[in-house]
Image 1: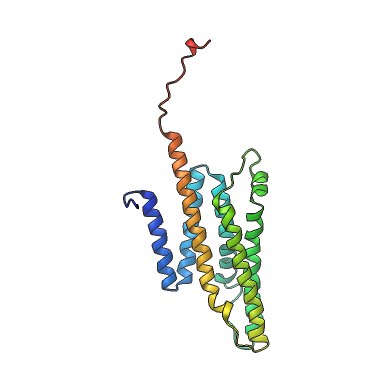
Image 2: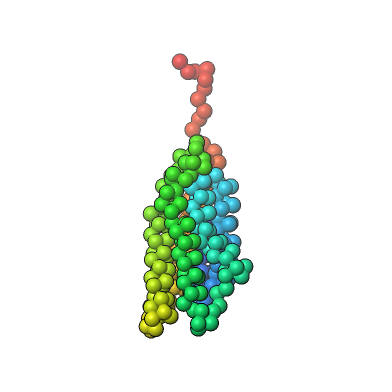
Length: 212
């Protein structure tokens, strides 16, 4: 049962409401902005709770979105194209998105090894994200790669194929929403662990004078 007075429940409901709102209104720009701000908040919270696993995973979750925003939002590469340039332009766009996904997939699969090098004296713990994130990133990479091939068939050879193009945004919403939900769950657990450590212990301290 959801306790509306609980900060954890309010956070989860807030994230869910924003995700549903941006998805149903089909506002990818606002969705991505909210996602980036939200993940940065997760990073700040995980650092505060000394949860290096969630911190590192959150940075990985930001990689594809930040790379694409740096390239496309700054105008380095335009998302607009004419009919004559559509094949080349879409190939560049899908290619960059595919590479940005790989830039997140590889460190996610090798997360323990990467973290061990960054924090040698910290032992990484496996989380639910280690079981889910590689598959969501792989799913996204497969859809992007298939969209790349479909782009050639549609704009290069003239076939009227738009299956992967039509589900492209849906898969993107699903992957990022899954990331946000899992990171929220991990942060709540970190908060609970940190709070549990600060609770006063019911154990009586040992009397050193009575020790044998």
